[in-house]
Length: 79
Image 1 (spheres, helix red, strand yellow):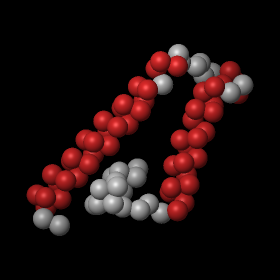
Image 2: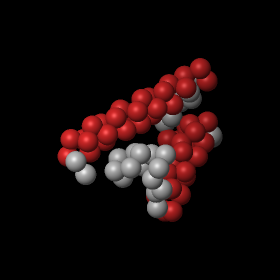
Image 3: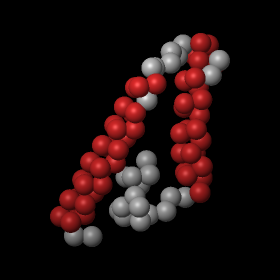
Image 4: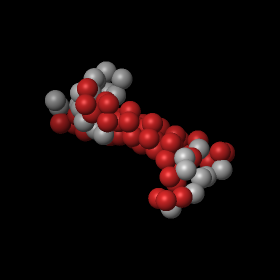
């Protein structure tokens, strides 16, 4: 959401306060739910710790691809 929401790169654009708060909340809440007692009620199972880096790699790859696609698009459109 933060990557594709602006023409500028992720490092140069500043998201709105509420979007940033919502994003930080989701990032904080997700691991909590995966390793807290309510996980059983929700039907979650904890992954082995060695797998926790996989989502980080996927997100990093997504950000890289989205930033590259934005650059190609805006270079071609001429904005």
